[in-house]
Image (cartoon, rainbow, N blue to C red; front, side):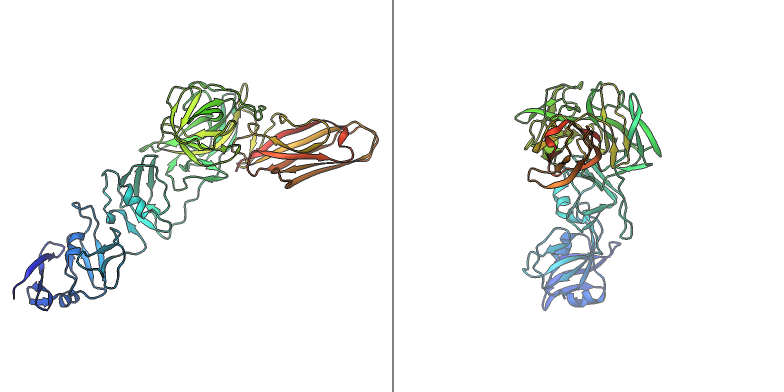
Amino acid sequence: MSKIRVNEITDLNDNLLWNVSEGVGGAHVSTASGDQTLNEALQSRVIYVDTIADLQALPTSGLVDGQQVQVKEYHAGTGLGGGEFYWDAPSTETDDGGTIFKVSSVATGRWKRIYEGETYLVDFGAIDGGSDQAPIVDQLNTSGRRVNLSGKTFAYTGDFSPVANFYNGTISATNRDFSFVQKTEESPATILQGRARIDYGTPNSVRVWVPDSLIMAGFRFFGTYRKPQGRQVSTGVNGSLFVSNETALSILNTKKLSNWYAVFAGVNRGDTVCSFVNLPFFRAHSLAGNTITLSDGGEGVGETTTSTTYDMANDVMVGSEVLVIQEGGNWSGRTATVTANTNGTITLDNVTGITSGDFFLVAPPGFTDYVYLGSWYLDTAEPRNRADTGDVVGALHFQIPGLPEAGAVSNQKISVRAMISPLATAYLGKLSYNLSTASTGSIAHSFRHDANSHVIAVEGYYKASSTTETPVTGPIQIPFSKTQAFWLEAAGSLVGSVTGRQFQCYGWIEP
């Protein structure tokens, strides 16, 4: 019987087992015991082939549904991994290049990988140490999938954001290196640290409480970290440390007074202990194209912006990630990238929505991984005193600018932006005023979170005496919705007698 050889099937020691060929009655296998149909041979013992290409070259005419074939492990020539496959005769599914393979000669029937709940990146042709593997990574980066990186490092051109459960390896992306530790199905989820407690340290430092290790989880916005699967790194501390505003200034050569600051921990690939630095919160004064002219952002300025400069070198921030805190005064939370900077301007790759008065925060350059720990205020001489729970911050700041000091108030917007941390989600204040009248009667101050009369707190007072009184109420907690502002209405029979109205800042909430 004449035969045409299609492929050599060998065992793991490269010993020839069969020659597979097409012949009379369908595909045949030549073995030491004689000639068999492919169906007979497949059912008699395990078949091993070298590569995925060899698997796809197997004749299909004699295959039975469910038949298994073992492909040798990772093949350097094609980059495709090995593993155990079975023949799904009725399948017409799309060839995905890793778990499902089509045989070109047939329309129906697919080789399917057998695996238990996880996928190996190398099975899809990803090359350790090779050029850009982003197309393969993106294909597997889907919610609910577990991806084993096989202890290897894969290059990724572009900004990577993990959605799948990657583990046991590294994805080296443009935005940073993502080092994923070994996990099993039984392993508990990584518990992220909360925001760090930050207090006054010395005239030239703040005191920061940190555990013995930190997850390099990126920016924190509304109490949630942006990169919860970040690298875990030792702090070299188990308690508190002092972060200097003289030497740990990252991009600044000298500190800028009357400015909000953020404390970051950062680390580079290969580092075993992280470093701690301060970076200023920046505020927009004006925009020209994608370039933002910077503004003073100290307390007491309200919505007024005045252009300013910082003692920093040109382009010192290029490539750094940016958290856009506000756009048009409203909360944002998106990220952008610095493409250029001077001592008074910052250019971003995307400024959509940013307007005068908006705050943004730049990640510390020079680190592959980082995590935001908290904010603090540097006044005209030293850090502002504060008491911090890691959520609620008690701090005595200025009277709110723009608050009507006398008489009635009709649903007026009162901005506290720049008065409190740019990432604060609620304001804590003490309301006080004078009633210089002999009359008796009532007055009510209604606090609203937007312009639509949605009241969130009412402070009412009844004056029963004929002497002058000075009501004091608070601290009052005012949560924000769209922006760091509230709307105030003051009314009542005695509202015309109000003088000296103040709403003193007693702190804020930053989760």
